[in-house]
Length: 191
Image (cartoon, rainbow, N blue to C red; front, top):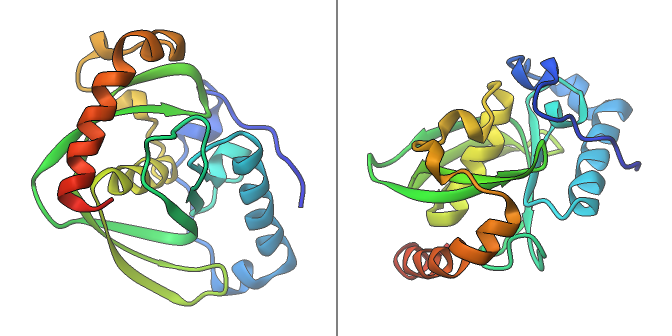
């Protein structure tokens, strides 16, 4: 396991649609090393998730984990989840407004509309089928990471550019109100 450099907005790798992995590639030593490196890099950077293109690997793999996260202490917990070749299907037209940031876009946050419920289909790191529903704030986390695999960064989805702000200004002016919104969403969806 090693920590990798995180690609920053403007690097072409973030604008390439990632290719699927075969089961053979996934189970190879290099495929498993990629997953270990994604996890280590995400944790080192205090991220809630990280996609392979963010560490310069244009393949359809991402990892998600929300525990005691200093950057997102208000997010519901998500156990470590590895998604290989994920497919997300919205289960509702209903959306919520999420204040998002990204390790590839340092010191910037903005409002993004996300589906309240999505079906997640993928393989885990052993190639086993995953099929579950993500709801609420957690659904937004899954959508954010899978977007990276489709060459989309959260700033592409910001509905109103006037919501863009630095982390410092988010903490000063928006955090308290957003936490109340998160609590309402968690009360309804449980995550």
